[in-house]
Amino acid sequence: MKSTIANIQKYRYINKIDLSIFLGITLILFSSFFLLYKPCIDGSCSLKFYFDSLYYLDYAQENSISNFSDFLILLLANRLGPFLTYKICQGNSFLILLFQSLILWYSIFRINDLKIIRSPFLWLNLILIISTVSISKEIYILYYVSILYTYIERKQVKYALILILISSLVRWQLLACSFLIIFYISFHKLINKKITTYLFIIGFLIAYSMVVKIFVANVEESINFWVNESIKKRGDGIGIYMLLTGYDKLGGYFLTFFFKFIFLAISGALKFLITFNFDPDYFHNFAEVSQSFGFIFLLFKWKRIRSMVSKEHLISLLILAIVFTAVQIFTPRYLFPVYLYLIILWQKSKKLYSSHLQQQALEHKILLKN
Image (cartoon, rainbow, N blue to C red; front, top):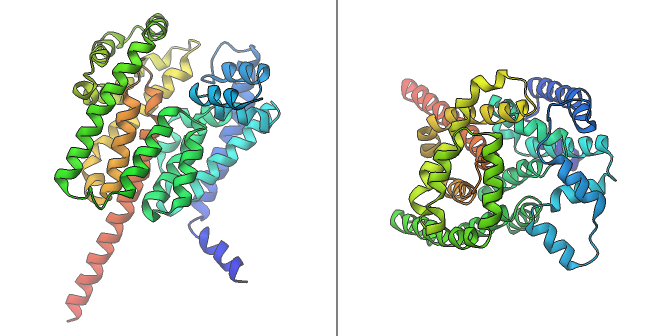
């Protein structure tokens, strides 16, 4: 009886509005799968309703994990999550849809006391829809940020371990973020003073700039190849971004971080008119545009977020931003973890602000009675 009551209380935040959104989004996911993803992946449609799915499917079909070396290659190449998804679902695209939809809804409902499901910026970002319908590693990011939020709120070791496990399924950069955030949370009482926090962030930013410098020096030829490919496809905004990225190889990332972040976050909005052109990259362009408009709104609300949520949440968000803004190729999708966590913090700030207003109203009533 007690366990039944506990389960009911756990999901007490699910009501008719949430259920309607759940059913509506589920319908969109299944419709997108059959009407867009399947025709695109089969080659009967020239549009691309996927990101790197073809690459992951080909790789998973041709490879397996036979030793630790194979596992390490998958981890460092950021292929582990999609590879395991493919193997778990035995390559069946419909089972992959169901599996990734399960991750989507579990991630949302486990923190739905923040009313995450009702955030329009979550659903207007096409990256989330595409990443659920097609095999991807981005879907694990939603689960990751939901666990990150819980870890910072409760500071329990089990959530730290889950962070490490899930981040290994996505990108090595996210794994690095996990260790940094866990380190910060573990010693946050020692780094709690304002000056100490600033020194921690500045020190990390400069140290990471040296890491980026070494990384760029070792893979510069590969970066140049993908940059040239990106210029052929896009041609817009690449010059500005590459100008900023040029400082990375000199160890100057700490000087350009802020400008690179703003450019990655909001420059997609400039592609708004391009979204009316139905070329093969139509959905990719729309995804960038939708994320940029979401970022613009959320960044305008930064003052409220900063004033309402804890320093631990803000520093964790900053760590995510610093690590992922270092991307050498103009790929706004890399900021997806930052975007999702910013949504969570915005919802958190709204909840706290609402509680603050209710408390003020209650105190006002008490004063009137007295």
